[in-house]
Length: 306
Image 1 (spheres, one colour):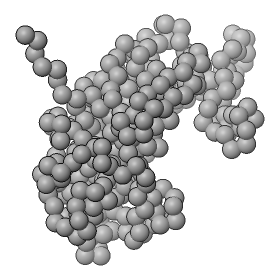
Image 2 (image 1 turned 90 degrees about the vertical axis):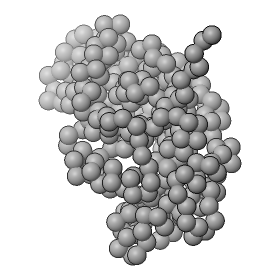
Image 3 (image 1 turned 135 degrees about the horizontal axis):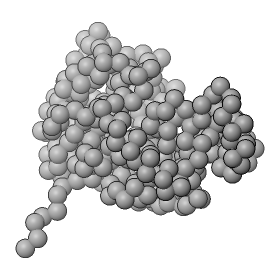
């Protein structure tokens, strides 16, 4: 008899660049609920690749806030900064496979070129400016003071994903960055490698990252890594309809505590927002696991009004 298949591991992976706000905490709560309601392990990863923005004090506050609303995790916290050797190794593999090229384009140049190709307001889709440069042209650009990034030759592949909440989504993958000009591994590379390392079977995260999923699926396939399932949850917005931020007022546990709203009350409000509690009902995370049904989750953004 075959042993039962391992349950999909869930995860939350914040970047320690500031204090978590209630939108981040809601996503963390949902990721935890997806995993725990399935009887799965739940792990934590700190995405601290960039030493210019990552701060240990932010990591400490983030971990404390997760504990305060009742979340726990299995095993030690993994830090991406400690995984650089593996990131660099898989980048070297892709270079040896002939799937990369250097790119000197700035973000502004990419946005301008993308808008010209796809219409005003387009951004983020790389138009392949440096993909076919001659050796001579590359050497000429190498004399510039700005070091190049390294891009993956995606070869125009169209990748489809069936998201657990958003349904079918597909996109043609552009030539994404694997390594930045400062030689740090790029997000779309590191997240794939580290999800595989931690055995992540289901990625639960904000739906602003849905458009990145085909890129990550292509990277995983090229590296021979197993693909996780995906569930992209609606974001939390401010009262003005923009993505939640500090300018929207009391949006962190510390802000709310200063107004006499403790972490238990925040947990209750977050639970209410996903249909798991009545307004102001005291709840524990064990209560929420027992009530959780992914099929009943709201599919629209939440507006957090201070």
